[in-house]
Amino acid sequence: MTSASVSGNAPVQQSRSLFGMSRGQRQAAISRLILIPMAVLYTLPYYWMVVTSLKSNDELRTTPPTLLPRDWQWSNFADAVNYIPFNQYLLNTLIITGLTMLGAVISNPIVAYGFSRVEWPGRDMVFYIVLATVFIPFPVLIVALFDIFAKLGWINTFLPLVVPAFFGNAFWIFLMRQFLMQIPQEISDAAKLDGATEIQVAYQIVLPLAKPAIAVIAIFAAISAWNDFLGPLLYLQDESKYTLSIGLTFFRSQHDVQFNLLMAASALVVLPVIVIFLAFQRSFIDGLTVGSIK
Amino acid sequence: MNVAISTSQSRRGISRLKLTRGERRKLLVGLAFISPWLVGFFVFLLYPILYSLQLSFTYYTGFGVPLDIGWDNYRMMMNDDLFWKSLVNTIYYTGLSIPVGMIVAMLLALAMNQNVKEIALYRAAFYLPSLLPLFAVSFIFIALLDPRRGIVSRFLSWFGVPTIDWFGDPDVAKIALVILAQFGAGQMALIYLAGLKAIPLSLYDAAEMDGAGMWRKFTNVTIPLMTPVILYNVILGISAGLQVFTQAYIITDGGPANATTFYVFYLYNNAFRYSQFGYASAMAWILFLISFVLAILVFKFASKRVHYDLS
Image 1 (tube, rainbow over the protein chains, first blue to last red):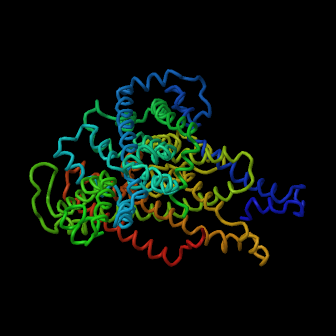
Image 2: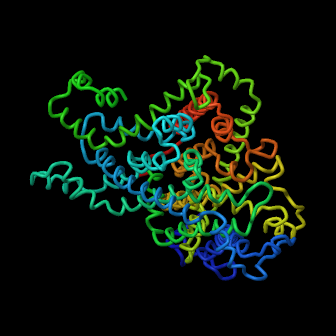
Image 3: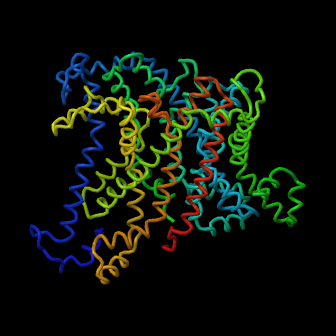
């Protein structure tokens, strides 16, 4: 674990013994011995998903399985979309995702503002409660929440999946708070001297500066809604209300799995996440590490 | 805790705290800002937890009126073999997936911490899977690990490994799910990587001067300074391990021979397949207590062993 920089500090006097490489090059070579096979391993599931999605039913039955489709059945994608009401489920998923994102963007920044930019007695103590709630596993709540939502008449609607997002999420409040604390206090003080109220300072001055963090929350919220399985499984009962996550289970009816159609549909569900990730890679990595390093 | 709850509820509570007029105003402004969270906390968290405590002492199918039955659900639980099996399965899965995940993530992070030009490529390759929907990953692993039609068995056959029925063999199914979880290890790897990059190089230089080799530097510098990150990993691992559900629901439906009937899976079944809301609530409360105790144990351990002195 002699880190990279050891070579950076003193590259010249390092022995050039093995294959004439410097110590840094040697270490990079050793890392690649781990990184390349692991990267191949981590890419294998996508490869197999795509290959399987393009095989014909006959070809799927051959053992051992072929490593590339003999003839590429692009029609599997059309078949998969027609096998389940894909467009309806896509629309349902998009509605839930969009509203969850909206709720997260409205609630978390303002709550985080209250925990970072406003001084009030007991603030830090209440914030510890926010952090403590992270430790409560969601499944602890599912029975009681289901019963409460049933009494409200919310079962079989999108409300139980969407409404809680408008009340903030402990982890995103934490993430947002970390960001808001970095914005200099003088900016707020100057505006207040000019007679601005706290809410004006929040919405007109501080939160506009926090747009990158709000974007991170929006993306994370969207992905968590898109990826949710347990929520829709609990609350949606009519087939017309299902999301894609529930819809995919239809490919596994009774005795057999329709591997090619299932993989085609999975590819369609996974693809938007890949695209969003590639587009916002930086935001993802920033959002990921903010919580963990003290 | 008292401050928060009593003040948010009544004016009497505020005056009892003997706050000045200015402080009281500040308090109200602060509470106004956090009011969305406050409402959500009471409605979607505190109330459901207390409500499920109440339900745990009843017989309730989800319809009609809950019947009071005292401690019967808890007594039943003690004699329910499947309850204990689900608990053991969950402990087994969590206990295996945390160290395995830690080793995989650390290995990836150490490898990525070298001067490798194409680092962005590896970062994307390892991180992306952890963002993909678990339900879709579960389906992909069904295809990947299928004994006849999957690529893994074909690949292993080149090395003379006999066909393994990954999800059909009770002895292997949990291990297969631990392997599946490693597909998401890249997220932790990046967090480890950020931790490694935060370690001052001077410490390694100093260790080297004292004659420490690679292994000594790893155990005496890297590991101690990484303890906050390792703690974070353990916390996330426990939380994820206790909640494991989707994989078991989609891939194995709790089988074979209940080998993947995990705690939350069994809780879900009791509530939504067998309409045993009371029993499921009792299970929920035991899970709540288990996570509470684990959280306290982790932090007690952390206060002794975790080094935060690096700034």
